[in-house]
Length: 321
Image (cartoon, rainbow, N blue to C red):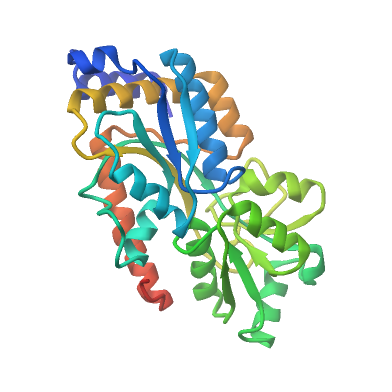
């Protein structure tokens, strides 16, 4: 993707003249809420972006982890925050998933937020512990079919991308396995290594170090093509589920009511951060690719993702909570 043309489009689309609030923003530290545990993929990516914005703004962008309910606890906090730009939400595709899974959210995902910018996308990888006794996707599916309802899998929480990736896998593989939701990725990883759950679907950036040191065994990645971070690992399509393609994505939102000029400034500053070679290098090492959209485009994308997730939830027979 060519960054310079994207930035030019952003400048035109968002307007070159900013209001006084946008011109002086930020004049104090900015809080970036993350709804998942420290060390999770969402947390790691948020800290990469927050550091770059701190450098650009000469104001601290502080990551604040507020975990629970697949990220919806932190999301609810942002929904109730003043619409001044000093509280932002850094979330994953679970933002869309939660809209399909939870009936009584403390917020409305479309009415209470303004989409600012997409950030990156990244595939998941299905991993198993050494004690699981499976070394390939075919072996896992065979074991699950031999023992229906007896094999379990972990996730970073109900409604997280890791949960939906596993549900899509369960549906396409035609297996009966039990979901064990955790508060975040680190807990799911630890219990997979320990053998308390058989497998889970972390983002490749989180799983790669554990795969390389042998604590986790990679069975397949969820994207249509192999991950540059794990080139030796087949796609699920190659491993026996033709056409399988499901990736995670991350973005930034602000509370509804934020001035349009400030939305424009935030979007342009985030796009500049994404274009910086050092941040792009960090994304690549973490197995992610920049995902650049203007706010209106990102808002349309999120609405489409919510609709798609509703279809997956219904097909999987998941009952909204």
